[in-house]
Image 1 (tube, rainbow, N blue to C red):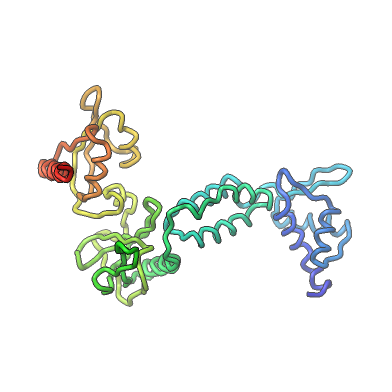
Image 2: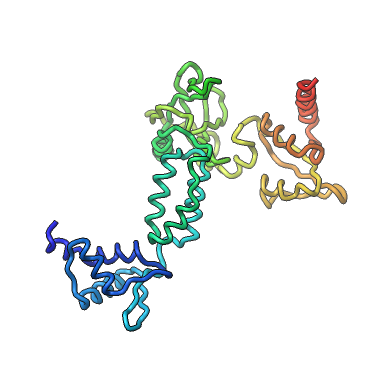
Length: 328
């Protein structure tokens, strides 16, 4: 590109230079900016730099000038503050459904939203390679296809796999495609899940998005349960454990007072607390009866008990007996 062509782009290059190389702790003088422009084969004069900076400020770029013998220029506020970028980096790092390769790519893009100096603070937080990550690179296309299907009110088809003891992919149902009506996507325990209506079971089913293969949109309208268009993901998620669905039951549980924070974290602050005695309280909630629900109860040992319904008490006793028998 000729120097004349570059000259037309001078204000944009100045913006790029300031965004990349300045922040509240790092600044550039006019002479510094002129030197940086020379690297891009753009000749400039001091007066034109002042005019371009005023133009950028009028455009909305927050350029701060500290006056002195040599004025110091730097970017003040940005679209994202450094603490916000750190949150984004942490979310990408901790997410199991994002592959290690994609995590690195995304973090590099996030770093470009900060100055080169602030980017180093983000880079020091990166420990992607040691995290447990999915290996399915197709997840990004899966998510996009599912969102599109929901928007267009269509069903989706896909193959669903798991791993065998040799750590090789094994397709469920011998590779036969699942066809479901997608309702929503949710992020639970670091994984992306599709919440959908599965006609084979005539019920709501959940699928790990990173274990879906060859997903495609089917030219059939979704099957919607009553009020399906108003499906409440948060309410549904509160009733199930680790995305294992099951029959929804009204359950009364008694907890030791030491578990109050656990209960609020699990069921929300709106849950009604009934004080049983000085040491315990009870709640009535709707939950999906499943092995993961029983596993959740097991975590708290004798600090929790099922009060009702009786059949659930009996079932849990059977589960306890099965575990005990395994150690005889």
